[in-house]
Length: 239
Ligand SMILES: Nc1ncnc2c1ncn2[C@@H]1O[C@H](COP(=O)(O)OP(=O)(O)OP(=O)(O)O)[C@@H](O)[C@H]1O
Image (cartoon, rainbow, N blue to C red):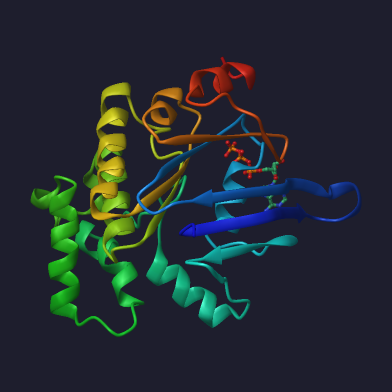
């Protein structure tokens, strides 16, 4: 049984002339401890698919099962599952610049059930921040950090609630090559704790370090030769 299993997912935005079929009949599974890269040209539906699989978007059709059970439809139950099962790294990072690193990283724990007390929240946040090598910046304002450091804050926040699956949207897009490699190493190290990674990326170097590549084009999954992310990248016309 896959940890996460999506079947026949489709998502249509808008209506009439504004109608966009962003994802069309895509199936995808993620096993425990697996890192899966989602590749394809800009606008092919990667972020939308991450939203559907990560239960932050409602599908037009198709199903998502978590640990073999269908994802709940009711919003409160979905929110709870999102908080317990997933960690998210959004494309724009969604870091509150005016808050400290500690303040940003404790956010998922504020919604955790059963409740996690303040002292425990800070302890776990400090552990997560230390785990990404930013212990020294725990009390620092997020706005004072470099782009690579902010990316690490986003990773710490995604990990703080010990998720089973981390969903990352272009986590290396704004980084130089060396920092991007460090960030990927950090993300892949989650597997040592049994967590899985589903990462949308344009970067073949990121995809090459994952266990498996799922390629998309125009909302659909396309065939990819086993273990050849660079071919996908070239075929997608981005290089
Ligand atoms: N909220 C929305 N309303 C209408 N159309 C949308 C919305 N979000 C995305 N789209 C459209 O859906 C299609 C897929 O977008 P999506 O962001 O999922 O692609 P992507 O592969 O992640 O792109 P990128 O790599 O540039 O982030 C695009 O045509 C986009 O313009």
